[in-house]
Length: 260
Image (cartoon, helix red, strand yellow):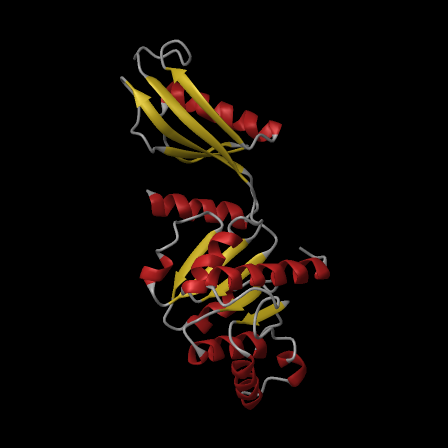
């Protein structure tokens, strides 16, 4: 159920359709479904799932469609199934309604799931952006809960994800080291033209990366646009402060381009 639900949410966001997610969060007495049951409702009606069918589901659909018409983001209801819904059973159910906005125009790819990424991803999730997060280690990707803004990809060859990214994606590389960063950067710079590429590391690492990129045939003017060390020059080397400095740089460059 969860996997199918998330797949459906992702498809809706990719097609930039608004919808409302309805979740049964509490039930007393007789109820048509279990707690946690969910549906997705669009302007045309039920798109996915069930909260029990019949009158209670129809009332949820009508309430969700009214939210879409009014532009309401959240709502919570307690319904007595007999008095409020017109059902013969005497239970009480509670539903949480959350409007799901279309996919954000600003897209960010994060390669690596280490300590900096663990601080970086939660900050990104507070922003209006869609995130592609790539790492070979499923256990590290699993440290952060699922989120409709976050597309996790486990890949042992991370550069293979690059061709699937939107051309306007901001690329951030904070992998386990130079050997992992370099193939990603070569693929991103040789065959694509992304608006931002940043790599975590020191000035010394930057020199080595630039030399290796030149050897790989990347043009000097393209290499010059790479941000390494990534982030704005403030804070210390603690992962959370590095994450804040990267966020600051991403927002600054996003706003300078005035296309997001």
